[in-house]
Length: 289
Image (tube, rainbow, N blue to C red; front, side, top):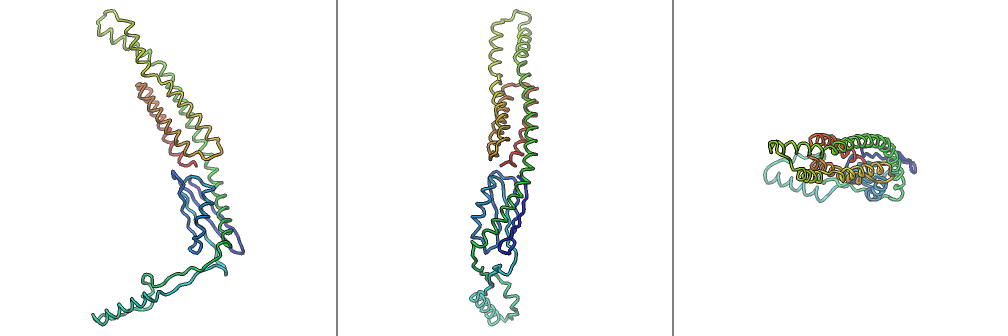
């Protein structure tokens, strides 16, 4: 579910901030950015996020406000590398007549000449600050997700009602299929026999076979059951996103079977409308944990 949250937390005179945003993803995928000095805390802070969010791509940025106690680390020259560069420059000058023409500013910009050494810090002293900011950001995120969740639920229920109405129409039309088939079959046979008497017994056998092949009662029952389950999951106070995905796959399968068995143009048109609604629901289900 797409959402954003931010939190600020004051700990030992230092302000800690956290920003977190989520976007749709089939599984939980956490990306956490934290100052280099505190990367040892990354797994613990990811655990806090995963305890509150179960699905989606999560991007979180944590920062520690500057203070007189903020560890900044040190910059050190990579002396062996500096000497190697200068030696190479000397060789260029003596062997090829190329003047050095290199300044300290140019030299210091060369790769790995300056090495950053993070200052050792007491992780336990800063962990409450990062946790506090992250908790507040997650609370803010939950408020936004809750608001969007209500809108999603309303949209799901609207589409479920449309599907129920469409299924009702299919049920009505399916009851007419056998009678229409009997009528058309009798007309075709009579035309072929050129007015001779039709064997009613043989005709009924064909009608019974057609009725068995085109019976969609089971599919209609399962579709109704899946829709009921879907609505029950919408009321559940639990992680249901993957269950909704599964139900939508099953609904789509039943609808496809129904279309094949009915072999009726009017029912096929209604099936297309149902599948359009299911596709929209499938896209929306990616927003649900």
